[in-house]
Image (cartoon, rainbow, N blue to C red):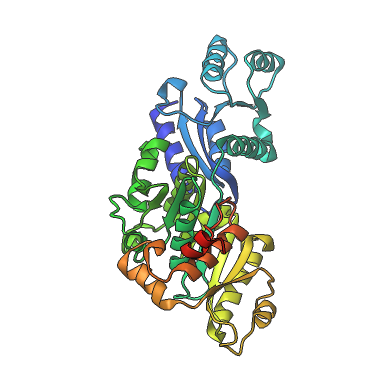
Length: 409
C-alpha cells in the first residue's frame, strides 16, 4: 500500500470514528485488518466504524502490527505464494482469523481451510456476516473472561443518597465476604468516594483512560486504591472537563472490561443520574438501584429516570430496583403502595432515616462499621445486599448479651 493510500485510509477512519456507532459489541474487541488493497479497506473501514466497542488497527502486513489483537482480518489478498505464508503466519499467532475477498475462488478457499482460517466472507456480503462474526467473537471472549457482575447506584433526584449507599453496600460486600470488590466513583464533578472511604487515591479514572492503550490488566489493577479486599477506582473534582466526546466514553467501556476481569463485583456510584458518562456502566449493570425519597419532587424525577431507562435505553424491568432512602414508616402522607403505583414498579426496598450517621460516614471518611450506633443501618444495608446484589455474603453475627450467653439464657 502506498503512503498516500495509508494517509487516505487513516483520514477516512478518523472521520468515521466521530460518528455515532449504530451497533455495539457486548465487550471491547481489538481487531487487526491487514490489506494492501485500498479498495477493500475503503469498503471495510466505514462498516467497522459503525460498530461500538471495537478498536481497529489497519496495516499492510502482519509484521507492522506491534500489539496483540483479539481477531485478524486479511482483506482481499492476491492469490500467490505470499498469501499462503501470510495466512500461515496469521493463524499461527491468532485463533480468530477472518478472510475477506472479492474473489473467493476454490484455491483460496482450500488454502484457508487447510490453515484453519475461522471464516471466509465475500467482500460484497459484509452485512450481516461480518457483524455476526464479531458478535460471536465478543460473546466467546465474554464467556471465557469471567467478568465481575455490576451494580449501579444512581440518584432518582440529586442528593437522595446514592454515593452513601454505593459506598456502604460495597463495604458490606467486602466485610462479609472474601470476594474482591471494586467501587467505581462515577461522579465526574467532585469525586468524593476517596474521602468517604478514607483512602488516599494516587490515580483516577482519567489517568487510566489516558494510558489505557498501554495498560494491561495488571497495570489497570495497580491504579486502584486498595483497602483489604475493597478497591476504589477514584475520580477527581472537575474531571468532567476531560470527558468530552465519544472517544472517551468508548474508552470507558474498555476500562470497565479490564477492571472486571480481575474482580468479583463492581459497584458504581452514579450519583449524577443518567448522563453520557454513565451509559457504559448502565449498559452492563446486572442491577440498577435508583435511590429516592418520599416527597413529590423526588418521585417525579425518579419516575422520569425509570421511564428513560426502560423506554430509551431498553433496560429490562427485572434489572431495576428502587430504594427509598431515609425512610420512616408513617412519617409521610405518601405510602410505599403509592410509590409502587407512581413509579409502576414493585421492586422497592427501604433504608431507615439516619441522616446523622450517613453524614458522619461521608464527612469523617470512616467505615460505617467503625461508627457508633450503626447496628440498625448496617443490618438494613446487609439485608439489601443479601436480597438484591449478585454476590453471596456471610450472615451477620448473632447479637446477644454476654452474660445471658454465659448463664444459658
